[in-house]
Length: 146
Image (cartoon, rainbow, N blue to C red; front, side, top):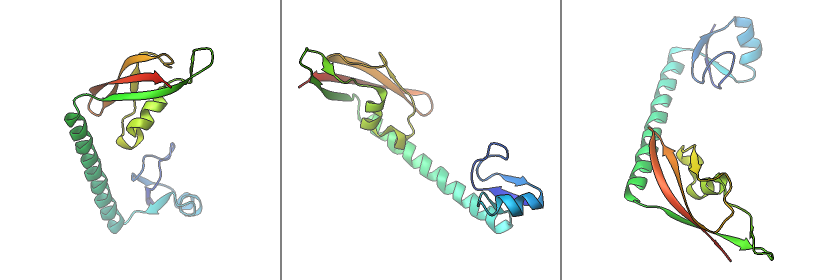
């Protein structure tokens, strides 16, 4: 029985991959859980069209991302942290804070590199992140207190 996977499965394969399974396994387990769809010519054509749309959207997002970072020569971010009674900063700046600032999950930027893991001092710090195709983009962020 030829089926197309609708979800990634460790044992069976990748999403939208066409596989051959035993009829009982497909009918009784995979189809009721909606993990697969029976492979017919019309389904194959629809999946090919869907993959093309996904690729076009990825290309469009990458172009927008490159255009944004090409336009911005230098990015400076300023964070303000509270100052405690004893003169120390309350809190710290981590990669998570910077990811939220850049909306990096939407833009498919995965790795951010900072000077230290947690930065809890006042001053200027450098960092960079990897864009797709191994392009590194540097940025500067400043930490002040209030």
